[in-house]
Each structure stands twice: as C-alpha cells, then as structure tokens.
Length: 278
Ligand SMILES: *[C@@H]1O[C@H](CO)[C@@H](O)[C@H](O)[C@H]1NC(C)=O
Image (tube, rainbow, N blue to C red; front, side, top):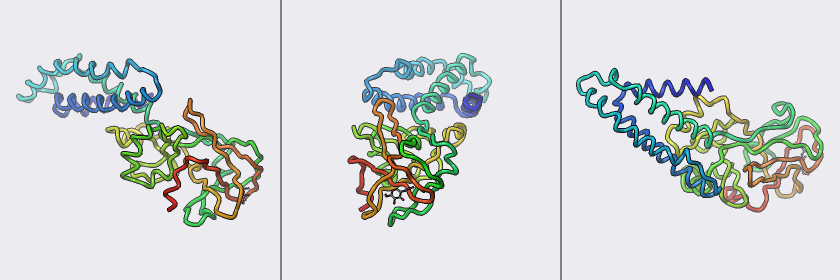
C-alpha cells in the first residue's frame, strides 16, 4: 500500500509540472479506455461494477475546475493556482485508475509445492525443439499439487487480436480456457517468457510500467509454464491440469509418482493450440 501511495504522489507531482489541462484530458481518455475494456469483462462474467461506470463522469465533472489554472498557466503561475479541489479530484481519479490496473492486470498463479525453488528445476527439455522443460529433484507422490498456472488473466479476444498477433510466441505459453473466454498470459510485454511474470497488460496505458516498477513485488514464478507435452514415443504424462472456470485458475497436479532428475510431462488437454509446433 505504501508503494501505491508513493506512485499516486508521483503522479500528482508529475502532472503539476506539465500543463494540467492536458494531463487531465489524457487521464480522462485512458480511464475511459480502461473502463470500456472492463465493461466487456463485465459482460463476459455477467457482473456489474458501478465504480467503473462512475469514472468517466467523475472526470468530466472535474474538468471545468481546471479553467482557472489553465488560464493562469499562460502567465506562468499555473502550478501555484491549482486549487486543492482539483488536486483532490485528480488524486482520486489517479488512485482509481491505479487500483483498476492493480486489480485486473495483476499476475496470478503460484507454486504451492513446498520448497518449490529446490524441488523443481528448469533446464533443457528432452523434447526436441521444445527449449526448456521442468524437472524434479526429488521423489514426489501422486496427488501432489504443484501450483496454479501463472500469468495475467485476459479476455481471449483482446489477447488474440492484440498481443497474440504482434507476438505470436506468446500464444504458445498462454493457457486458453476450454470455454475460450479467457487466457492466462505469463509472457512479458514483448511476448517472451521470463523466470517471473511481473503482470501488466500491453493494451492498457501505463499498466506494464506500473507492474515492472511499483508492483514488482507481486511477481510470480513461471516454472509451471515450462512443462512440455511428452515427445512422441515416451508415452505417459505425470501432470494433469484442472481448470476452474469460476475462479479462472488452472491447478497442476501429479497424476503419477515421480522420481528425481526426470522431466515432467503435462497432458495439455484437447483445446491447447498446438499450431506453434508446426
Ligand atoms: C514422467 O513420465 C514420463 C513418461 O512415463 C517419464 O519418462 C518421466 O521420467 C516421468 N517424470 C518423472 C519426474 O518421474
């Protein structure tokens, strides 16, 4: 929370050194952009948030307050004449925007297996051309929950039309839910997979930056994204993935006892997009 307050103070300070009217217009713009994205989320989930609908109105009602400061800016005294009311409105709008980003674009998923960092190991896969894979360092028994799929939950259409088109490799790492409404995207802003997912969404102004700076603490480990399908001929899988369409979580569980030093293989299910494998 301290980080969020700092960010908000920074925003206020930054905005007062520019032309305030301009900053306000752009804030109104980005908030409206953001709100429309969330409205489509809302439709997909059938829920309603009045806070989101109130945003554009809040901003519209704040704009007239800027008139005195923008005319004063001409004679060079703009900053000192911003009324406390304007600052309060701006602060509240900035805070709302920050909280919306924090809520919707946060990285989800976690490794729940004890001592995950030492029990699981990312290294070159036995699967030809698959890059890295996930290996165990210990025996683990059937039924062990490894964790939930990491990444940012995004509406599937936004993802496939936007980031997925610009960075097709991101599709290969993203989990598409069987109802095709959402994906979990663990990749960075360039569509590449890193050891951790910081969160953020490329379609939303400032989102990636906010998560790679002030909300960095929320990062999640991406080891589970490394689990490949078994190469042809190897046979079975040791891991199953179970979707929860209500919580939008994908739980990874061992469906066999596993031995140290071996690679884990996942049953990706029927809907996984395998076009990336050529
Ligand atoms: C997972 O199953 C495959 C196929 O049976 C096997 O080759 C591999 O060694 C197993 N992995 C572990 C960690 O036991």
